[in-house]
Image 1 (cartoon, rainbow over the protein chains, first blue to last red):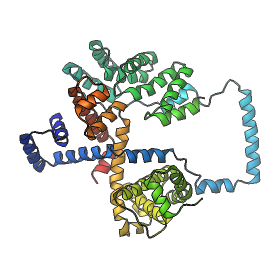
Image 2: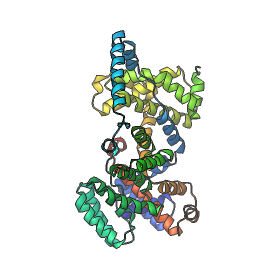
Image 3: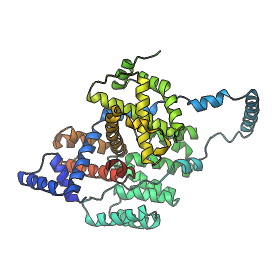
Length: 249
Length: 188
């Protein structure tokens, strides 16, 4: 889908096409099945994102803990006396070891949380800035990023940041690329710039990745504060942040 | 405490937490058992059960639902049908008794499910957008003027509000299309 057709569809749905544009659009719709499909998709997406009730219901259902299933119940039921004795002995040994290893308070190490929960962000951005040079650089940088060539991506993102150090997309993806090559302090700097801008598309994602920066630079307390604030907010990552907190605390 | 079928349906239509918890407690284990005996796991069962509840909610949003059977039988047959559709997609349809698909009464459920599945994908990607993008898109669809949107969102001009709306919508559509599930649900 090219930008012109994208804009035409949106203008059509917003009732902003002039009479002549409308005529042409309707004519094209009859002849172009791709355009018709694209229009359907836009209409469906509009309808879907207004379904706050269904999104709320889904959130409620997500939060419900499912009861133990029949298979699990059966497993517990058939635990014999001997199984229970053996399990109790194992538990005692486990508790003993735990008391012995008093310095090992946390369930998960920082590295383990990182390897279990961290993954690089997928490219979802479309380039449409006011500066065409930046757009072209961004397209190429994101291509390298998508093919996991993070070092090349970083060189290209740097060119963008040299022109405009506050560029949000450049900073965000540089941050993730730096995480990927273990340059955690540099990643931290990138993410801090995104956070400073406040009103942008990557705030929730940046909060999330900053948590990993703290973890990997051994700032466990700061990481806990960070994941705590995500867990208490309305972020997309809140459930995962809660899980991480359980692992960390 | 037990709820009647009518009370359960009303509870679903109101998204009442007590009723939602009750139906999970009461009906989920046997559905899960069914799924586990038919090539699925607990996670599949959880997904499917959730979709079944949403399908029922959607149906009631369109028109009142009068059941000729009890709620257990109803949700069980919906889950069977939805699971059969899933298995067909996974090309394992011969491994389940396929009598459910012959049941014409459930045709309509199947249509509602197709919509539910598509919209679930769209909504998943919508939720992934930043807070301001979500708000701009919803405000536009509520037919709030660009001037008001600019004011609410603290943007410098109407022109910027419009540009932002395009950016957000474009990002959303691209994100949806890049999902590997998109082709599966959209081509149906």
